[in-house]
Length: 243
Image: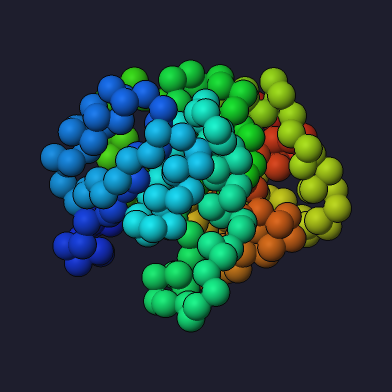
């Protein structure tokens, strides 16, 4: 999670808009207060449960939703899945904001080994952060995800997936990845960025982007994090793999 200053600059001064979804009012208030004073962050709304999170995300169109997982009415897993896979249901013309797609989702949790986190990542969340992290690191994660990157903690993700495999474990064998695509996926699982993968394989950045795109398409993965979850589930990558 580096380069947030450059990311902020790329946004030409526009703040990253954030919706905080958490059933604890004190947590929501604290996060809102702390994030609102971070450079390049604008908290535009709150939600107290998963149903409200979906409603408010569709109404306010934030760039990023900070999504707790253990919430009433609808948990963060189902809220994430609904936001990222189901249309908003508008019968009218699609405006520019709707055409831009759903917000990014970052799971925010108390426990690194929370079973729900892995399921939320499988539902399409771009990554996760711990509530105990310094607010500056949470803000940086928000900026990075808003810029289209993923927040990966390979060791923690590997522990979570191997502790409780998900239903998508057969996705990799069915995807028929090429040898090079499997190699790229392994490197993605170590947390390497596209430029770092290009350097490791001694190929161009555009070649890596093509391979990453092919991997996501073949796996039916919504983002890099989801693809890495599938890699762990399928046994292509094991905890402790460093490339």
